[in-house]
Amino acid sequence: GKLQLHHIKPIRLGGRTTVENGVLLCDNCHKAYHGLYDLELDEMYVANPDTDYNAVFEKQIKSLKWLGAQWIAGCLFCV
Image 1 (cartoon, one colour):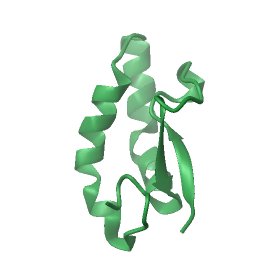
Image 2 (image 1 turned 30 degrees about the horizontal axis):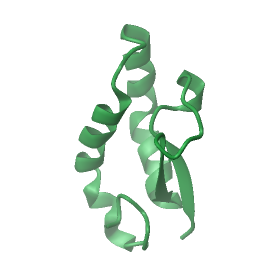
Image 3 (image 1 turned 90 degrees about the vertical axis):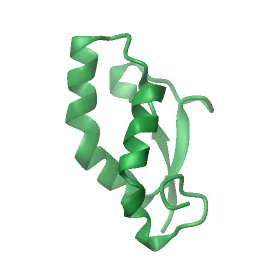
């Protein structure tokens, strides 16, 4: 699989393409992440635009470690 840039704070919610706001995910983990969490992130933003997206991402990444079945080198979830 290929690695893709994932924005911790989504661009649609004001996130920027920076080193601090990006992590590398394999294409399967990236698709799974967005499928599971896009709606939740949008709801958090509506409730509190100042949400700490880094803290939210750290919590979410722990719950998604099972997605690492492919073990793609460099993917934050697969390692």
